[in-house]
Length: 267
Image 1 (spheres, rainbow, N blue to C red):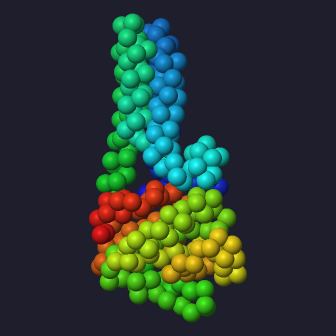
Image 2 (spheres, rainbow, N blue to C red):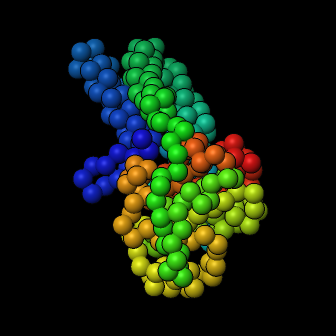
């Protein structure tokens, strides 16, 4: 599972697990405040805030070339861009420093922190274990911009990346130049950009306006690919091996290509 739906809102599962971990950690902090008279809540909030800011800042600095072109996108956290290691390390250091002089605070703070970490990391591991792999490319025909049809299975035979996107989706729009660069840099990989639910005129107009002439842009007006692959939000990128078996999925904006495409085990 890559996303959780709350009514009309689709939230990446990692974000949902993080929110669940924070909520449970503060529930533990509230228990200590009520039963033991020690309140680790304020320190816990500072750990979360500083950890969040550090994780986001390090990620933005690593990919400054993207954010420099659109500075306001730095505060658009929907792209999921965080450096988890930097954020976690900063939170731990803040907690250690703020509880250094209070021995009575250390145990409640540690208990609340470990509870939140258990929910996040344990939930992530469980979700990964339960996510099916090896699922074949769905037997679906999509439509090219010239109105001809092609089955997705036609792209099997070499590693395949299917990107589900829409022109109204801001992270999708930011991601397209990155994917275009990756497509040019990795001709050994098939890239298919399956637009979800829009007309050929809408897609062509967007491509022309942004100078994005890319091979394998196809239309899926009925959103069959989303339904058959269980993809709840956009952008979602599906990674298949050369035999057409699902290897990995990623919901949200992808990082710039560089060496990251090798990390998915497809090249």
